[in-house]
Length: 546
Image (cartoon, rainbow, N blue to C red; front, side):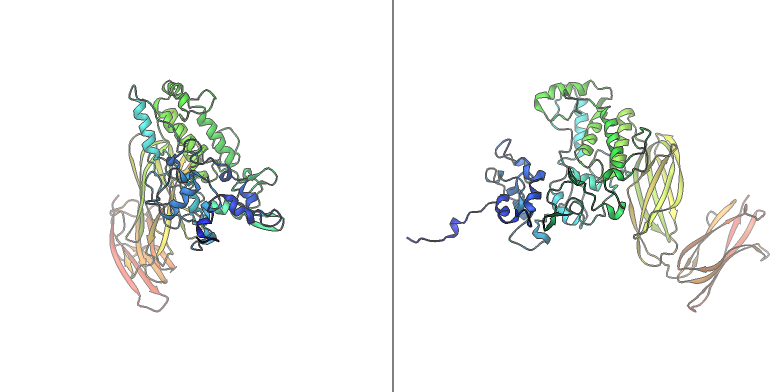
Protein backbone atom coordinates (compact mmCIF):
# COMPACT_ATOMS: atom_id res chain seq x y z
CA UNK A 1 0.00 0.00 0.00
CA UNK A 2 1.40 3.38 -1.03
CA UNK A 3 0.76 6.63 0.73
CA UNK A 4 1.45 10.26 -0.11
CA UNK A 5 0.26 12.71 -2.75
CA UNK A 6 -1.92 11.45 -5.62
CA UNK A 7 -3.81 13.19 -8.44
CA UNK A 8 -7.03 11.58 -7.23
CA UNK A 9 -6.94 13.79 -4.17
CA UNK A 10 -6.80 17.06 -6.15
CA UNK A 11 -10.06 18.94 -5.68
CA UNK A 12 -11.57 20.64 -8.74
CA UNK A 13 -14.22 23.34 -8.74
CA UNK A 14 -15.55 26.07 -11.02
CA UNK A 15 -16.61 28.13 -8.02
CA UNK A 16 -15.44 31.73 -8.04
CA UNK A 17 -14.03 31.26 -4.55
CA UNK A 18 -11.11 29.33 -6.02
CA UNK A 19 -9.99 32.42 -7.92
CA UNK A 20 -10.89 34.83 -5.14
CA UNK A 21 -8.20 33.40 -2.88
CA UNK A 22 -5.76 35.54 -4.86
CA UNK A 23 -7.96 37.91 -6.86
CA UNK A 24 -9.72 39.49 -3.88
CA UNK A 25 -7.01 41.66 -2.41
CA UNK A 26 -8.86 44.92 -1.72
CA UNK A 27 -5.91 47.27 -1.97
CA UNK A 28 -4.50 46.04 -5.25
CA UNK A 29 -6.03 42.97 -6.87
CA UNK A 30 -9.75 43.63 -6.53
CA UNK A 31 -11.35 41.81 -9.45
CA UNK A 32 -13.56 39.84 -7.08
CA UNK A 33 -14.87 43.01 -5.46
CA UNK A 34 -16.21 44.19 -8.82
CA UNK A 35 -17.47 40.74 -9.79
CA UNK A 36 -19.53 40.46 -6.57
CA UNK A 37 -21.45 43.57 -7.67
CA UNK A 38 -22.55 41.88 -10.88
CA UNK A 39 -25.74 40.02 -11.72
CA UNK A 40 -23.51 37.13 -12.79
CA UNK A 41 -22.58 36.59 -9.14
CA UNK A 42 -26.19 36.46 -7.91
CA UNK A 43 -27.93 34.95 -10.96
CA UNK A 44 -29.99 31.82 -10.16
CA UNK A 45 -28.39 28.59 -11.33
CA UNK A 46 -30.34 26.27 -13.61
CA UNK A 47 -31.01 23.77 -10.83
CA UNK A 48 -32.39 26.25 -8.28
CA UNK A 49 -35.98 26.00 -9.49
CA UNK A 50 -35.91 22.35 -10.51
CA UNK A 51 -32.98 19.97 -10.45
CA UNK A 52 -31.79 18.97 -13.88
CA UNK A 53 -33.46 21.89 -15.68
CA UNK A 54 -31.19 21.56 -18.70
CA UNK A 55 -33.40 23.83 -20.81
CA UNK A 56 -31.64 26.69 -19.05
CA UNK A 57 -28.22 25.40 -20.13
CA UNK A 58 -25.67 26.65 -20.90
CA UNK A 59 -26.42 30.17 -19.69
CA UNK A 60 -27.62 29.45 -16.14
CA UNK A 61 -24.89 26.95 -15.44
CA UNK A 62 -21.21 27.75 -15.37
CA UNK A 63 -20.29 24.09 -15.78
CA UNK A 64 -22.62 23.71 -18.75
CA UNK A 65 -21.17 26.78 -20.48
CA UNK A 66 -17.65 25.37 -20.16
CA UNK A 67 -18.84 22.25 -21.97
CA UNK A 68 -20.71 24.34 -24.56
CA UNK A 69 -17.62 26.47 -25.28
CA UNK A 70 -15.58 23.29 -25.74
CA UNK A 71 -18.04 21.47 -27.99
CA UNK A 72 -21.22 23.28 -29.04
CA UNK A 73 -22.52 20.37 -31.12
CA UNK A 74 -22.37 17.68 -28.42
CA UNK A 75 -21.57 19.38 -25.11
CA UNK A 76 -22.50 16.32 -23.04
CA UNK A 77 -24.44 18.10 -20.29
CA UNK A 78 -24.89 16.31 -16.97
CA UNK A 79 -28.29 17.29 -15.57
CA UNK A 80 -27.12 16.80 -11.99
CA UNK A 81 -23.44 17.74 -11.90
CA UNK A 82 -23.85 20.78 -14.18
CA UNK A 83 -26.38 22.57 -11.99
CA UNK A 84 -23.65 24.52 -10.19
CA UNK A 85 -22.22 27.11 -10.17
CA UNK A 86 -24.03 29.95 -11.97
CA UNK A 87 -21.57 32.24 -13.81
CA UNK A 88 -18.17 32.28 -12.15
CA UNK A 89 -14.68 33.41 -13.15
CA UNK A 90 -13.87 30.09 -14.83
CA UNK A 91 -17.12 30.21 -16.81
CA UNK A 92 -15.75 32.98 -19.01
CA UNK A 93 -12.00 32.48 -18.49
CA UNK A 94 -10.02 29.28 -19.00
CA UNK A 95 -7.09 29.45 -16.56
CA UNK A 96 -5.27 26.62 -18.36
CA UNK A 97 -4.97 28.05 -21.87
CA UNK A 98 -3.68 31.09 -23.70
CA UNK A 99 -5.46 30.31 -26.97
CA UNK A 100 -7.58 33.46 -26.69
CA UNK A 101 -7.00 36.99 -25.47
CA UNK A 102 -7.59 37.36 -21.73
CA UNK A 103 -7.87 33.54 -21.59
CA UNK A 104 -11.53 33.90 -22.63
CA UNK A 105 -13.68 30.96 -23.69
CA UNK A 106 -14.60 32.59 -27.00
CA UNK A 107 -17.33 30.35 -28.36
CA UNK A 108 -18.69 31.73 -31.65
CA UNK A 109 -22.39 32.48 -31.94
CA UNK A 110 -23.32 31.48 -35.48
CA UNK A 111 -26.90 32.72 -35.74
CA UNK A 112 -29.89 34.16 -33.91
CA UNK A 113 -33.07 32.21 -33.28
CA UNK A 114 -34.70 33.61 -36.43
CA UNK A 115 -31.90 32.13 -38.54
CA UNK A 116 -29.96 35.35 -39.11
CA UNK A 117 -26.30 34.46 -39.70
CA UNK A 118 -23.97 36.69 -37.70
CA UNK A 119 -21.08 37.95 -39.88
CA UNK A 120 -17.63 36.68 -38.98
CA UNK A 121 -15.71 39.13 -36.81
CA UNK A 122 -18.78 40.70 -35.25
CA UNK A 123 -18.40 42.03 -31.69
CA UNK A 124 -14.79 40.98 -31.05
CA UNK A 125 -14.38 39.89 -27.43
CA UNK A 126 -18.07 40.66 -26.90
CA UNK A 127 -18.92 37.52 -28.87
CA UNK A 128 -18.54 35.59 -25.61
CA UNK A 129 -21.37 37.63 -24.06
CA UNK A 130 -23.58 37.17 -27.12
CA UNK A 131 -23.81 33.42 -26.60
CA UNK A 132 -26.18 33.99 -23.67
CA UNK A 133 -27.39 37.57 -24.01
CA UNK A 134 -29.76 36.89 -26.91
CA UNK A 135 -33.39 36.03 -27.46
CA UNK A 136 -34.40 32.41 -26.97
CA UNK A 137 -37.12 32.37 -29.64
CA UNK A 138 -37.92 33.22 -33.25
CA UNK A 139 -40.02 36.35 -32.78
CA UNK A 140 -42.12 35.96 -35.92
CA UNK A 141 -42.87 32.29 -35.30
CA UNK A 142 -43.93 32.90 -31.71
CA UNK A 143 -46.06 35.98 -32.32
CA UNK A 144 -47.77 34.42 -35.34
CA UNK A 145 -48.46 31.37 -33.18
CA UNK A 146 -50.20 33.49 -30.56
CA UNK A 147 -52.29 35.17 -33.27
CA UNK A 148 -53.38 31.76 -34.56
CA UNK A 149 -54.44 30.70 -31.06
CA UNK A 150 -56.30 33.99 -30.57
CA UNK A 151 -58.30 33.28 -33.72
CA UNK A 152 -58.98 29.65 -32.73
CA UNK A 153 -61.56 29.31 -29.93
CA UNK A 154 -60.55 26.95 -27.13
CA UNK A 155 -56.82 27.16 -27.81
CA UNK A 156 -54.71 27.81 -24.70
CA UNK A 157 -51.72 30.14 -24.76
CA UNK A 158 -48.23 28.85 -23.91
CA UNK A 159 -46.04 30.87 -21.56
CA UNK A 160 -44.03 33.98 -22.35
CA UNK A 161 -44.95 36.61 -24.90
CA UNK A 162 -41.38 37.89 -24.93
CA UNK A 163 -37.93 36.82 -26.17
CA UNK A 164 -36.64 36.01 -22.63
CA UNK A 165 -34.86 38.45 -20.34
CA UNK A 166 -31.70 39.46 -22.15
CA UNK A 167 -32.04 39.91 -25.94
CA UNK A 168 -29.18 42.40 -26.06
CA UNK A 169 -27.50 40.77 -29.06
CA UNK A 170 -30.72 40.88 -31.06
CA UNK A 171 -31.15 44.56 -30.19
CA UNK A 172 -27.52 45.46 -30.95
CA UNK A 173 -27.74 43.83 -34.38
CA UNK A 174 -31.24 45.15 -35.10
CA UNK A 175 -32.67 41.68 -35.66
CA UNK A 176 -35.32 39.23 -34.50
CA UNK A 177 -37.95 41.62 -33.16
CA UNK A 178 -41.43 41.27 -34.61
CA UNK A 179 -40.66 43.61 -37.50
CA UNK A 180 -43.29 42.59 -40.09
CA UNK A 181 -40.46 41.77 -42.50
CA UNK A 182 -39.75 45.46 -43.07
CA UNK A 183 -36.49 46.21 -44.85
CA UNK A 184 -36.32 49.63 -43.16
CA UNK A 185 -36.16 47.91 -39.76
CA UNK A 186 -34.32 44.66 -40.31
CA UNK A 187 -30.62 45.10 -39.62
CA UNK A 188 -30.65 48.78 -38.63
CA UNK A 189 -27.73 49.31 -36.24
CA UNK A 190 -26.36 52.23 -34.25
CA UNK A 191 -23.37 50.80 -32.38
CA UNK A 192 -22.46 47.89 -34.63
CA UNK A 193 -19.00 49.35 -35.24
CA UNK A 194 -17.89 49.35 -31.59
CA UNK A 195 -14.79 47.14 -31.69
CA UNK A 196 -15.46 44.74 -28.82
CA UNK A 197 -19.16 45.53 -28.42
CA UNK A 198 -20.29 44.60 -24.89
CA UNK A 199 -16.76 44.52 -23.46
CA UNK A 200 -15.86 48.00 -24.71
CA UNK A 201 -18.77 49.69 -22.94
CA UNK A 202 -19.47 47.46 -19.95
CA UNK A 203 -15.89 46.75 -18.86
CA UNK A 204 -13.89 49.99 -18.79
CA UNK A 205 -10.96 50.05 -16.37
CA UNK A 206 -11.83 50.74 -12.77
CA UNK A 207 -9.51 51.91 -10.00
CA UNK A 208 -9.44 50.44 -6.50
CA UNK A 209 -6.51 51.41 -4.33
CA UNK A 210 -3.46 50.88 -6.50
CA UNK A 211 -5.22 48.33 -8.69
CA UNK A 212 -6.62 49.13 -12.15
CA UNK A 213 -8.69 46.37 -13.71
CA UNK A 214 -11.56 45.87 -16.16
CA UNK A 215 -14.85 46.43 -14.38
CA UNK A 216 -16.32 42.97 -13.83
CA UNK A 217 -19.51 44.39 -12.31
CA UNK A 218 -20.64 44.99 -15.92
CA UNK A 219 -22.96 47.71 -14.59
CA UNK A 220 -23.32 50.94 -16.53
CA UNK A 221 -24.31 53.04 -13.54
CA UNK A 222 -22.87 53.38 -10.05
CA UNK A 223 -24.63 55.03 -7.08
CA UNK A 224 -21.42 56.88 -6.19
CA UNK A 225 -19.74 57.71 -9.51
CA UNK A 226 -22.89 57.88 -11.66
CA UNK A 227 -23.24 56.75 -15.29
CA UNK A 228 -20.23 55.00 -16.81
CA UNK A 229 -19.80 56.92 -20.05
CA UNK A 230 -16.10 56.13 -20.56
CA UNK A 231 -16.67 54.45 -23.93
CA UNK A 232 -19.22 57.04 -25.06
CA UNK A 233 -17.12 60.20 -24.95
CA UNK A 234 -15.01 59.34 -28.01
CA UNK A 235 -18.10 59.83 -30.17
CA UNK A 236 -20.50 61.85 -28.00
CA UNK A 237 -18.04 64.35 -26.55
CA UNK A 238 -17.66 65.50 -22.96
CA UNK A 239 -20.81 63.97 -21.51
CA UNK A 240 -21.19 62.80 -17.91
CA UNK A 241 -24.61 61.14 -18.04
CA UNK A 242 -26.51 59.10 -20.61
CA UNK A 243 -29.21 61.77 -20.53
CA UNK A 244 -26.67 64.20 -22.02
CA UNK A 245 -27.10 62.41 -25.37
CA UNK A 246 -30.05 64.20 -26.94
CA UNK A 247 -32.50 62.54 -29.30
CA UNK A 248 -32.84 63.82 -32.86
CA UNK A 249 -36.55 64.60 -32.41
CA UNK A 250 -39.47 64.52 -29.99
CA UNK A 251 -40.17 60.87 -30.73
CA UNK A 252 -42.69 60.26 -27.94
CA UNK A 253 -44.74 63.33 -28.86
CA UNK A 254 -44.83 64.93 -25.41
CA UNK A 255 -43.81 68.33 -26.76
CA UNK A 256 -40.23 68.18 -25.45
CA UNK A 257 -37.14 66.98 -27.31
CA UNK A 258 -35.43 65.01 -24.55
CA UNK A 259 -32.51 62.64 -24.28
CA UNK A 260 -32.58 59.42 -26.27
CA UNK A 261 -33.17 57.28 -23.18
CA UNK A 262 -36.06 59.51 -22.07
CA UNK A 263 -37.63 59.42 -25.54
CA UNK A 264 -37.40 55.60 -25.56
CA UNK A 265 -38.91 55.48 -22.07
CA UNK A 266 -41.75 57.72 -23.25
CA UNK A 267 -42.43 55.47 -26.24
CA UNK A 268 -42.46 52.41 -23.97
CA UNK A 269 -45.04 54.10 -21.74
CA UNK A 270 -47.11 55.05 -24.78
CA UNK A 271 -47.06 51.46 -26.05
CA UNK A 272 -47.77 50.01 -22.60
CA UNK A 273 -50.90 52.17 -22.34
CA UNK A 274 -52.38 50.27 -25.31
CA UNK A 275 -51.66 46.77 -24.01
CA UNK A 276 -53.60 44.53 -21.59
CA UNK A 277 -52.33 44.48 -17.99
CA UNK A 278 -52.15 41.79 -15.33
CA UNK A 279 -53.39 42.20 -11.75
CA UNK A 280 -50.23 44.07 -10.75
CA UNK A 281 -50.65 46.63 -13.52
CA UNK A 282 -47.76 45.31 -15.61
CA UNK A 283 -48.08 44.49 -19.31
CA UNK A 284 -49.20 40.87 -19.54
CA UNK A 285 -46.40 38.45 -20.37
CA UNK A 286 -48.07 35.08 -19.50
CA UNK A 287 -45.03 33.94 -17.51
CA UNK A 288 -47.01 33.11 -14.36
CA UNK A 289 -48.99 29.88 -14.76
CA UNK A 290 -51.12 30.73 -11.70
CA UNK A 291 -52.55 33.85 -13.37
CA UNK A 292 -52.50 32.66 -16.97
CA UNK A 293 -56.25 32.07 -17.18
CA UNK A 294 -57.06 35.58 -15.95
CA UNK A 295 -54.38 37.11 -18.14
CA UNK A 296 -55.68 35.21 -21.17
CA UNK A 297 -59.15 36.61 -20.52
CA UNK A 298 -57.74 40.13 -20.42
CA UNK A 299 -56.07 39.53 -23.77
CA UNK A 300 -59.28 38.16 -25.28
CA UNK A 301 -61.22 41.27 -24.18
CA UNK A 302 -58.69 43.89 -25.32
CA UNK A 303 -59.93 46.42 -27.93
CA UNK A 304 -57.09 45.82 -30.42
CA UNK A 305 -57.60 42.12 -31.06
CA UNK A 306 -54.67 39.94 -32.00
CA UNK A 307 -52.49 42.97 -32.81
CA UNK A 308 -51.57 43.21 -29.12
CA UNK A 309 -49.31 40.17 -29.42
CA UNK A 310 -46.87 42.10 -31.62
CA UNK A 311 -47.22 44.97 -29.16
CA UNK A 312 -46.47 42.86 -26.08
CA UNK A 313 -43.56 41.09 -27.76
CA UNK A 314 -41.87 44.28 -28.96
CA UNK A 315 -42.55 46.03 -25.65
CA UNK A 316 -40.61 43.37 -23.77
CA UNK A 317 -38.02 43.11 -26.56
CA UNK A 318 -37.04 46.70 -25.76
CA UNK A 319 -37.80 46.57 -22.02
CA UNK A 320 -35.84 43.35 -21.39
CA UNK A 321 -32.86 44.74 -23.29
CA UNK A 322 -32.39 46.87 -20.15
CA UNK A 323 -30.44 49.61 -21.94
CA UNK A 324 -33.33 52.06 -22.46
CA UNK A 325 -32.52 51.87 -26.14
CA UNK A 326 -28.82 52.73 -25.80
CA UNK A 327 -27.64 49.51 -27.44
CA UNK A 328 -29.39 50.52 -30.68
CA UNK A 329 -31.44 53.72 -30.33
CA UNK A 330 -32.26 54.10 -34.02
CA UNK A 331 -33.72 50.60 -34.14
CA UNK A 332 -35.49 50.80 -30.76
CA UNK A 333 -37.19 54.09 -31.58
CA UNK A 334 -38.36 53.00 -35.04
CA UNK A 335 -39.58 49.66 -33.72
CA UNK A 336 -41.60 51.24 -30.91
CA UNK A 337 -43.13 53.90 -33.16
CA UNK A 338 -44.13 51.33 -35.76
CA UNK A 339 -45.50 49.01 -33.09
CA UNK A 340 -47.65 51.75 -31.55
CA UNK A 341 -49.15 52.60 -34.93
CA UNK A 342 -49.69 48.93 -35.77
CA UNK A 343 -51.51 48.16 -32.50
CA UNK A 344 -53.71 51.23 -32.92
CA UNK A 345 -54.56 50.95 -36.61
CA UNK A 346 -53.17 47.74 -38.06
CA UNK A 347 -50.93 49.62 -40.52
CA UNK A 348 -47.27 50.58 -40.61
CA UNK A 349 -46.22 54.11 -41.74
CA UNK A 350 -44.06 52.90 -44.62
CA UNK A 351 -43.66 49.20 -45.19
CA UNK A 352 -40.33 49.00 -46.99
CA UNK A 353 -40.29 45.38 -48.08
CA UNK A 354 -37.03 45.39 -50.06
CA UNK A 355 -33.99 47.58 -50.71
CA UNK A 356 -31.25 46.42 -53.09
CA UNK A 357 -28.42 47.85 -55.15
CA UNK A 358 -26.30 46.81 -58.11
CA UNK A 359 -23.72 48.32 -60.47
CA UNK A 360 -24.82 48.70 -64.09
CA UNK A 361 -22.84 50.52 -66.79
CA UNK A 362 -20.87 52.58 -64.30
CA UNK A 363 -23.92 53.60 -62.27
CA UNK A 364 -25.18 52.29 -58.95
CA UNK A 365 -28.78 51.24 -59.50
CA UNK A 366 -30.90 51.27 -56.33
CA UNK A 367 -34.32 49.64 -56.15
CA UNK A 368 -36.78 49.52 -53.28
CA UNK A 369 -40.39 48.54 -52.76
CA UNK A 370 -43.07 49.49 -50.26
CA UNK A 371 -46.19 47.50 -49.41
CA UNK A 372 -48.07 50.44 -47.83
CA UNK A 373 -47.36 54.09 -47.13
CA UNK A 374 -48.82 56.61 -44.69
CA UNK A 375 -48.05 60.35 -45.07
CA UNK A 376 -44.88 59.54 -46.99
CA UNK A 377 -43.32 62.70 -48.47
CA UNK A 378 -40.45 60.75 -49.97
CA UNK A 379 -36.98 59.29 -49.63
CA UNK A 380 -33.60 60.93 -49.34
CA UNK A 381 -30.96 58.67 -50.91
CA UNK A 382 -27.82 58.78 -48.78
CA UNK A 383 -24.33 57.50 -49.64
CA UNK A 384 -21.18 56.86 -47.60
CA UNK A 385 -17.71 55.63 -48.51
CA UNK A 386 -15.06 54.62 -46.00
CA UNK A 387 -15.03 56.70 -42.82
CA UNK A 388 -16.72 59.71 -44.41
CA UNK A 389 -20.07 61.00 -43.16
CA UNK A 390 -23.35 60.20 -44.87
CA UNK A 391 -24.23 62.59 -47.68
CA UNK A 392 -27.56 63.03 -49.44
CA UNK A 393 -27.18 62.40 -53.18
CA UNK A 394 -30.80 62.52 -54.29
CA UNK A 395 -34.49 62.62 -53.41
CA UNK A 396 -37.37 60.48 -54.67
CA UNK A 397 -40.94 61.59 -53.97
CA UNK A 398 -43.22 59.19 -52.12
CA UNK A 399 -46.86 58.26 -52.77
CA UNK A 400 -48.33 59.94 -49.68
CA UNK A 401 -50.83 57.46 -48.29
CA UNK A 402 -51.53 54.24 -50.17
CA UNK A 403 -52.18 50.58 -49.52
CA UNK A 404 -50.89 49.65 -52.98
CA UNK A 405 -47.44 48.20 -53.57
CA UNK A 406 -45.04 50.86 -54.90
CA UNK A 407 -41.69 50.42 -56.66
CA UNK A 408 -38.91 53.00 -56.67
CA UNK A 409 -35.55 53.32 -58.43
CA UNK A 410 -32.63 55.71 -58.27
CA UNK A 411 -29.37 55.77 -60.24
CA UNK A 412 -26.31 57.21 -58.54
CA UNK A 413 -23.12 58.24 -60.29
CA UNK A 414 -20.32 58.21 -57.67
CA UNK A 415 -17.92 60.52 -59.52
CA UNK A 416 -14.30 60.54 -58.39
CA UNK A 417 -14.00 56.94 -57.26
CA UNK A 418 -11.09 55.45 -59.19
CA UNK A 419 -10.46 52.13 -57.43
CA UNK A 420 -12.58 49.21 -56.29
CA UNK A 421 -14.55 50.65 -53.38
CA UNK A 422 -17.33 49.51 -51.06
CA UNK A 423 -20.11 52.09 -51.11
CA UNK A 424 -22.88 52.10 -48.48
CA UNK A 425 -26.38 53.38 -49.16
CA UNK A 426 -29.43 53.99 -46.99
CA UNK A 427 -32.81 55.65 -47.37
CA UNK A 428 -34.04 58.43 -45.12
CA UNK A 429 -37.81 58.20 -45.33
CA UNK A 430 -39.54 61.51 -44.55
CA UNK A 431 -43.15 62.03 -43.48
CA UNK A 432 -45.04 65.24 -44.18
CA UNK A 433 -44.74 66.19 -40.49
CA UNK A 434 -40.94 66.01 -40.67
CA UNK A 435 -40.59 62.64 -38.97
CA UNK A 436 -37.66 60.68 -40.40
CA UNK A 437 -36.91 56.96 -40.41
CA UNK A 438 -33.81 55.28 -41.79
CA UNK A 439 -33.63 52.06 -43.75
CA UNK A 440 -31.02 49.40 -43.22
CA UNK A 441 -27.71 49.98 -44.98
CA UNK A 442 -26.79 48.10 -48.13
CA UNK A 443 -23.35 47.82 -49.70
CA UNK A 444 -22.22 47.62 -53.31
CA UNK A 445 -18.75 47.07 -54.74
CA UNK A 446 -18.07 49.88 -57.20
CA UNK A 447 -15.33 49.12 -59.71
CA UNK A 448 -14.00 52.67 -59.91
CA UNK A 449 -12.55 54.20 -63.05
CA UNK A 450 -13.46 52.83 -66.49
CA UNK A 451 -10.78 51.13 -68.58
CA UNK A 452 -11.37 53.28 -71.67
CA UNK A 453 -13.11 56.40 -72.96
CA UNK A 454 -16.72 56.06 -74.03
CA UNK A 455 -19.75 58.18 -74.85
CA UNK A 456 -23.21 56.78 -74.11
CA UNK A 457 -26.41 57.41 -75.99
CA UNK A 458 -28.31 60.23 -74.34
CA UNK A 459 -31.35 59.33 -72.26
CA UNK A 460 -34.17 59.87 -72.82
CA UNK A 461 -34.07 60.01 -76.58
CA UNK A 462 -36.15 61.55 -78.13
CA UNK A 463 -36.31 64.14 -75.34
CA UNK A 464 -38.17 67.25 -74.24
CA UNK A 465 -37.06 69.40 -72.52
CA UNK A 466 -34.02 67.68 -70.94
CA UNK A 467 -31.76 64.71 -71.54
CA UNK A 468 -28.70 63.26 -69.80
CA UNK A 469 -25.41 62.63 -71.59
CA UNK A 470 -23.08 60.16 -69.86
CA UNK A 471 -19.45 59.46 -70.67
CA UNK A 472 -16.47 57.59 -69.23
CA UNK A 473 -12.99 59.00 -68.58
CA UNK A 474 -10.28 56.42 -67.71
CA UNK A 475 -7.76 58.95 -66.37
CA UNK A 476 -7.59 62.65 -65.55
CA UNK A 477 -8.28 64.61 -68.74
CA UNK A 478 -9.26 67.97 -70.19
CA UNK A 479 -12.85 67.28 -71.25
CA UNK A 480 -15.09 69.23 -73.58
CA UNK A 481 -18.73 68.27 -74.32
CA UNK A 482 -20.59 70.35 -76.93
CA UNK A 483 -24.06 70.22 -78.57
CA UNK A 484 -24.34 71.14 -82.29
CA UNK A 485 -27.19 71.66 -84.74
CA UNK A 486 -27.40 70.12 -88.22
CA UNK A 487 -25.40 73.03 -89.66
CA UNK A 488 -22.50 72.28 -87.33
CA UNK A 489 -23.11 75.40 -85.25
CA UNK A 490 -22.51 75.27 -81.50
CA UNK A 491 -25.81 75.19 -79.63
CA UNK A 492 -24.41 74.86 -76.11
CA UNK A 493 -21.11 74.00 -74.47
CA UNK A 494 -21.96 71.65 -71.59
CA UNK A 495 -18.50 70.84 -70.22
CA UNK A 496 -15.08 72.48 -70.59
CA UNK A 497 -12.82 71.53 -67.69
CA UNK A 498 -10.31 69.06 -66.29
CA UNK A 499 -12.13 66.04 -64.89
CA UNK A 500 -10.95 63.12 -62.79
CA UNK A 501 -11.16 59.51 -63.91
CA UNK A 502 -14.63 58.05 -63.57
CA UNK A 503 -18.13 58.03 -65.00
CA UNK A 504 -19.52 61.51 -65.59
CA UNK A 505 -22.76 62.98 -66.85
CA UNK A 506 -24.13 66.31 -68.02
CA UNK A 507 -27.72 67.42 -68.51
CA UNK A 508 -28.80 69.29 -71.64
CA UNK A 509 -31.97 71.30 -70.96
CA UNK A 510 -33.53 73.49 -73.67
CA UNK A 511 -35.27 75.56 -70.98
CA UNK A 512 -31.97 76.82 -69.60
CA UNK A 513 -31.29 79.71 -71.94
CA UNK A 514 -31.52 77.76 -75.21
CA UNK A 515 -34.45 78.14 -77.62
CA UNK A 516 -34.60 75.28 -80.09
CA UNK A 517 -37.06 73.74 -82.50
CA UNK A 518 -37.75 70.04 -82.91
CA UNK A 519 -35.21 68.15 -84.94
CA UNK A 520 -31.90 66.30 -85.00
CA UNK A 521 -28.95 67.53 -82.96
CA UNK A 522 -25.47 66.18 -82.28
CA UNK A 523 -23.39 66.01 -79.12
CA UNK A 524 -19.65 65.51 -79.12
CA UNK A 525 -16.96 64.77 -76.56
CA UNK A 526 -13.29 65.67 -76.89
CA UNK A 527 -10.98 64.46 -74.11
CA UNK A 528 -7.22 64.98 -73.82
CA UNK A 529 -5.49 62.96 -71.07
CA UNK A 530 -3.08 64.97 -68.92
CA UNK A 531 -0.62 62.05 -68.95
CA UNK A 532 0.03 62.53 -72.67
CA UNK A 533 -1.96 59.55 -73.95
CA UNK A 534 -3.97 59.76 -77.17
CA UNK A 535 -6.96 62.07 -77.25
CA UNK A 536 -10.52 60.77 -77.64
CA UNK A 537 -13.29 62.24 -79.76
CA UNK A 538 -16.75 60.87 -80.52
CA UNK A 539 -20.07 62.27 -81.74
CA UNK A 540 -23.62 60.94 -81.43
CA UNK A 541 -27.06 61.97 -82.65
CA UNK A 542 -30.10 62.88 -80.55
CA UNK A 543 -33.65 64.02 -81.33
CA UNK A 544 -35.60 66.88 -79.77
CA UNK A 545 -39.32 66.18 -80.09
CA UNK A 546 -41.66 68.92 -78.89
